[in-house]
Image 1 (cartoon, rainbow, N blue to C red):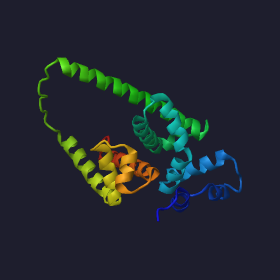
Image 2: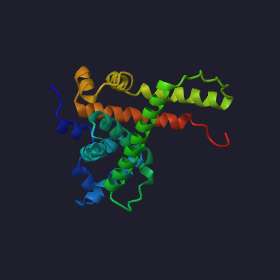
Image 3: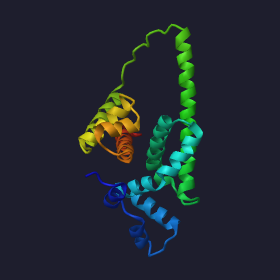
Image 4: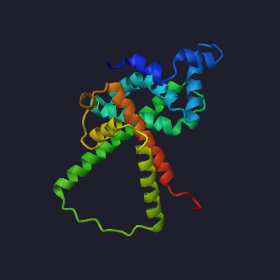
Length: 217
């Protein structure tokens, strides 16, 4: 029998009661957020999942209000939470965690709209202009090393995920299927598909950091 959302949350992520107990019994929402941030900075995936579950719907509604397209919104929400994971150490508590995430969601939405306009412009130009084959340039030893490190890091990360999660990623990014259809094909819930996509994207971000050339190397 499929697990309910509540059951999955209880098994995979710390609930608010446990978090508040760690905060000395206080019930302020800000305390829960700060505990989440602290544990995420330590590399806790369950705490990131808890943050994702806690704020997904509000961020989804916010972004949908700007894009007015469900498929585009799904994509931007994933980009938003990937950016949250990548920059969580920059959160200083000068605003609420939700306000900080809203700021990232706004910037991500604006970037998505800007990219969409640029793509439309490029398509319009391609329809009226002949394109010349791009000249090939030699890959420097540093670039070759970075690519090799990146490939090795990706392979290590992909071995850490289940086969259905890899299938979800390919269905989304190779076949461009909507979340609902992916959930039906893989016999998973929409929430499970979204969470899996977010996890794989975080892993690719980490792999990219490993493959990036270091200054002075």
